[in-house]
Image 1: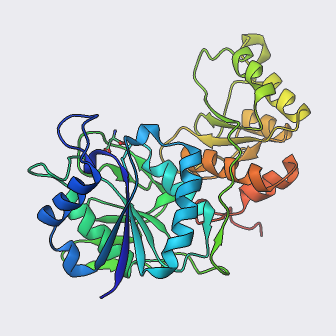
Image 2 (image 1 turned 90 degrees about the vertical axis):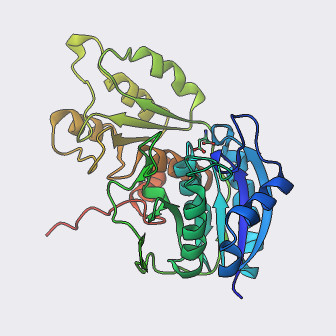
Length: 335
Ligand code: ASP
């Protein structure tokens, strides 16, 4: 029988009644056996309790520990399933995708909108599909949810109270689990299985909005090692000094302090193109790094990761341009 490591971290899937009441580890395994007996027909499942938290409590230190744990344990299995709350699932999937390089087996994250013990729960199907994907899907960090397999670092939680909670706006699904389960080949394997679990935590995600007082983010800069700006549309931000809210001084100060600034879009689909409008070109001139079609969460976690392994703004820019785990569509080559 193939072997699957099932690492439980928490979330609605393992909760009972209203939060904070959660299924205890023993109760969770018992409920799992009672509610999803098929799981144990698919594979020899080894359950491990990593944590039992609402995913709003998930932190970068826990991503590093989780990655180290998976790096140690995964080679003894045919795949891993990580159960996790949906709120920060995309962040955790992004972190694991950057930290676990050259995966020998799939790592599939899943969760649910209704707890496993409840009637009409989506946890049963999500778990069965996640184990199926961990056995037959691509060797990547994926999210399996509502009959679809997604590249984890491309996802966004888009719904709070419907079962199809995740989408991957800029990248096709990696698998469909309908009557038949079909999977795409996924990323090409690159090198040996390596753990890169370090992160620089001193980063910030700034969403631009009409009325943003530019002096506020300016005051944050001395405390930061990197900044992600969620700009409008193609990557625009206000730069007209006569209107009093130009972000030009922020970019200039970041450049002076050698703090990398990555720009991503607030728009749901496509990505930034800083050459399109004057405002974007102005930012480019200030050394701002275009984040392409990365989601804001993937860009933020990638910046944390890149800053921990790379020195200097130029080097960070180069690393941010280069796809590390399929999180970014490389711009077409000129000519
Ligand atoms: N608040 C929960 C969590 O992220 C939501 C869920 O799991 O769906 O842990």
